[in-house]
Structure formats: C-alpha cells, structure tokens
Image (tube, rainbow, N blue to C red; front, top):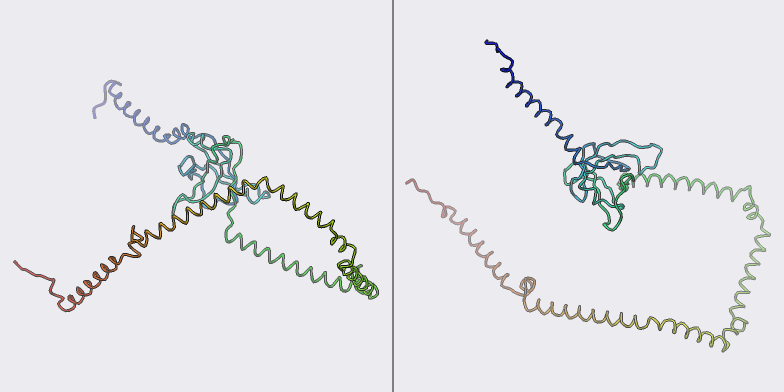
Length: 316
C-alpha cells in the first residue's frame, strides 16, 4: 500500500468522518431537542387506579395528542383511596392556553383496541387559566368488583346488626336495666293503660259538637276570619294573575300549532306524499315486489327444469 506523503491527504477522510459523527449525534439527540422545544409545564394527576397507563403514554387535550406521561407511581398508602396512584405528565406549549381552572382528567383508551391514554377536558372557556401547581383528580369509576365489595361489606354489617339486635332483645327481656324492670312492673303497666284510656276519653270529648273548641269553630266569628284570610290570599295571588294568564294563552297557542302540524302530517301521509306516505299508502311498491318474487320463482323453476340451458361450450 502506498502511504500518504503529506497529512493533507487525510483531510477528506477526516471531514467525512466528522460529518457522519455529527449526523449520528443529531439523530440520536433529535427527540431530546424536539421535546425541549415543544414540551412545556408538568402537571400532577391523582387517581384511584391507572390500569394500562404507562410512562410514555400520550396525553390528549380535547381529543388531540398534546403531551406524554412521564411517571406513574404509588402515593401515600395511608392516604385517601382516590389518590393511591400519582401520575406526572408533561404538556405541549400549544395546549397550555386551552386549559382552564375547571379542567377534568380521565384515564381510558383512545379508541377500540388502542393503548390507554390520559385525557384532559379543557373546561369552561369563561373560567380562569389552569394553575399548573394544582393537582388534578381523576373521578373514581364504580366497577362491578367495587359494587360486589360493597355488597360484601353491607352483608357483614347486617350480620353484625342482627347479632347486636338479638343481644339487645335478650338484655331488655332479662335485664339488668331500667327497661327490664319497668316491663316486669305489672302495676305500672296497669296505671299506664288507665292513663291511656283517660286520654282517649278527653280526646273524644274535645271532638264532640258540644265542646268549647267546636262551638268556637261554629261561631260566626270563625267564618268571618276564614273569609278574611281567603280574601288576603286572593289579593296576594292577583299580582301574578297576568303572568299566569299569558303563560296559559301561550301554551294554548303552541298546542294549537302542534295540532295543526300533526293534521298536516296526517294529510300528507294519507295523500301518499313523501317517502313515508308512499311506503304506507302507495301499493306500487307492493306490486313491484310481488312481480319480482314471481319472476324469481319462474327463474328457479326454469333452472330446475333445464339446468344446462344457460351453459354454452364451444371448442372453436
């Protein structure tokens, strides 16, 4: 091999090697450069569960990919059940102006058989901008397993209540305690029955026509007071009488327009106008269908009788 006599003969190879290394480094760090230019603030989302959500999953804002999930890990095990999973995500700068203070987060698949993504609903445009120092909360989804666990807990609680009720009944029956003593005191029970009978007698006496309350109610003064109360109520209701009358008249007009529209629709249907009218009252479609079925039966019969009629073979 001929050795180069001067170092300048190495210069083209060095330049090519430098270009190749530069291109390789640019391609290697291209994704990092793109993220540094496109990605913006980071948000924190709390959820009860994040089944299928992994770091690198997309973040959708109004149905458009606008970020990525960076971390998914467990939170405080002694905290609330709604904050068991902590999700960190980075948003694109283009999606930041659309997020408002009442934005909502959900975790679901983007479409059928697609990976799970973190979805953000922007919120009401009239509210203030989202403070990215706040934490978003994913609403808890009540699954079948969760309902079954609630049923199991409820059954255990019912069994406990049944046991406690039986124990309470036994304690009330046998004692010790004031209630058990009162239940065993037959003299007190007899006195209470006598008092109850006397109370019923007093109530019947007060309800009699000759009693003082009945006479006061039958007096003309009571009738006069009732008439005055009714007049005051009527005066109070006259303030809205005009509004109620206008509302009733408007309702009657609307009902009349609806009735006219229904009559016109029934007339058009009976006249055979439109697709629905022709389908209901025009027998041309039925006749064409019957003719088609008749021709189809004739074709079937002809094929059964002469199956080779429609086949033609020619050698030349």
